[in-house]
Amino acid sequence: MQCAALIPAYLEERHIRRVVGEARKHIERVLVVDDGSADATSSEARAGGGEVLRHERNQGKGAALRTGFRHLLDAGVEVIVILDGDGQHVPAEIARFVGTARHGTMLAVGNRMADPRGMPWLRLLTNRGMSALVSQVCGQRIPDSQCGFRMLRREVVELLLATAKTSAYEFETEMLLVASRQGYRIDAVPVTTVYADETSKIRPVRDTLAFLRMLRRFRREFPR
Image 1 (cartoon, rainbow, N blue to C red):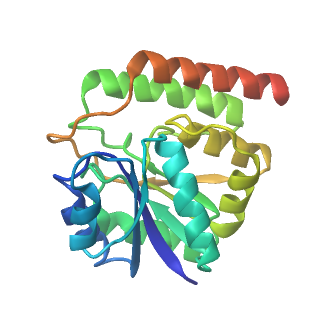
Image 2: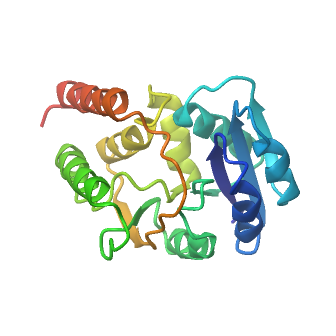
């Protein structure tokens, strides 16, 4: 079973070399998709031992994931573990996701809610509210729908590439909605909450509106 880590990155020159280097201790192949960074993200990722693809202009996290998905599927990869390049995810925990895949899980999402100490209170409230909404639309409980630390089997990735429509941060939510509508169970994997000097690239108003529009679209297209 070929496994690879996929890291979408934008302006992550401070952290990406360490993240890639640590990830390579736990998974053989690490692909970084540099989404049009104007800094040294690409060179730092290569210095950490990662394979790098680069968008010439910033297209959004969803677009970076799509690029990485296509590249890894073409290479015959069966299991893809996604993690962020800003140091919020602990690369040693990649093994937990690969372990779920070996036991037959098709899609797993990290869960920081079991022990959210260290998470800013506003982000905690927002995550819980959004997770409740997403769980309702998906028809299954997803305790931390906003966590970007994930594992997908090839079958699920192919489904997303064929049917998902978004290209920014809401792609991570659309991933859960599309998979749920096709009957996939989404498992939760406990992960560590890490917050340090990273700067969120989420645009609160614009990205929240996009998230709500997508939920409305799914409710309309897939009424219960």
